Image (cartoon, rainbow, N blue to C red):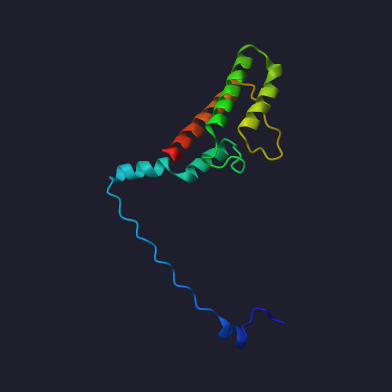
Length: 142
């Protein structure tokens, strides 16, 4: 039996397509093209999402713009503790502190074990990531 073929009954039962709703026209901007380009750049959600993926942030548990000020401050505080542990050679604390950081600031590692933040370069990368989150949060609030 061919279910894709139209019968006389289905031809007559087709409903007419609904007319598209009239959408209000967005007026042309009076801003200069340089300002328009700048606004488009700082409000580019696609770019912000790409940046979050680059930092391995979990966009499902922490959607764009949903990270709170308290989360950022908590993550920053933990990074400061990691910095102190690195400077005082307390390597035994780094695993626990890294786990606390990844709990405060959700990341997406899939099935991989989250890396221990045990070098100055990794610490700086996480600091930069939080700074980028603050900047993108300010963009969305602004």
